[in-house]
Length: 146
Image 1 (spheres, rainbow, N blue to C red):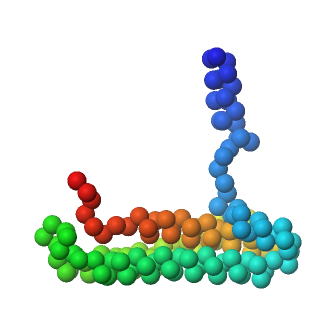
Image 2 (spheres, one colour; image 1 turned 135 degrees about the vertical axis):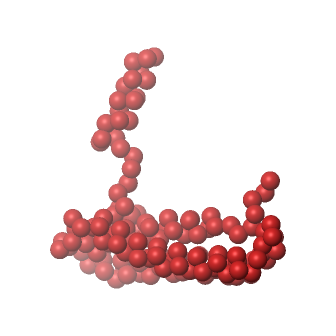
């Protein structure tokens, strides 16, 4: 039994058995490549637009939720606190967009000047947008339940 456990640990620690995905890999981009090969710019544009739309919808929905939140639910909450929360949310999103673009520029450096660059930058952007949508959804203005 110990031999099997040791073998399993060895297999999991071996690099070719890594379960991590590259930030420049994306299922939707892969489907565009499969379907259109190198003539995939329209397909990439479509999935990129859908990703941006989903991100903007998540952001706007959360902004609306925060704007309509009653700060009196907070212990000694003030209008100033609420305004600060709204300003921080807006500023955070602006900073995150800069971060996303810089990060994807970094992550796709090896593909720049190659025919795979558009695939890589689109995949990175979509992957980070999906992560950001989840982060936005986790912002909860109401106090934690005790």
